[in-house]
Length: 190
Image 1 (cartoon, rainbow, N blue to C red):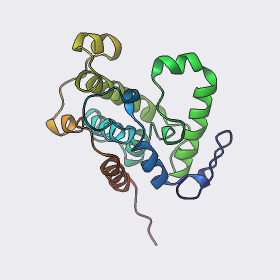
Image 2 (image 1 turned 90 degrees about the vertical axis):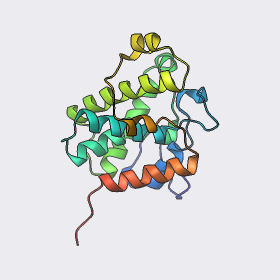
Image 3 (image 1 turned 180 degrees about the vertical axis):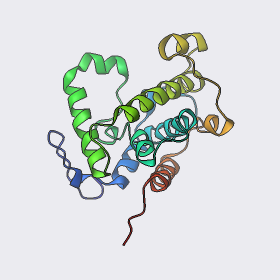
Image 4 (image 1 turned 90 degrees about the horizontal axis):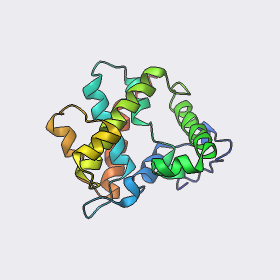
């Protein structure tokens, strides 16, 4: 990693995980294999911010720890990339196991339950599906009916959520990701 850490994919240690590495990697990983509209890729870092905003819409009173876990739901992709769901099915269990090991190490690194709690997991899935619908229809060329068949149509959201669908450059995505992570992380008391 750019921090100098070495992460063992088969046995990842929470001690080898840094939020700056996660933000840097996710800001450079393209959602939808880069098959999106716009001059910039739509990054996994930006997707994480979208999922976080949608989760806040669905469950405004959840704990900050649950919100942080939802925000980090795709953090393993900073190392293994974002593979489209149909191809994940082809790869099979080896991919899912590797992704799970890395995500659990990320969760432990940031003092969150590993694996994610059922509340965090279910909220992340619900918000992720809503985000995928919005990304599909606004960035990836899907019709609303096609996206509805695959993801289900989400409810209407406030305009700040839709603003998160305008792709940013990598440095802006990284910076906003780090800022939001800091907002979701309790300050250690001396």
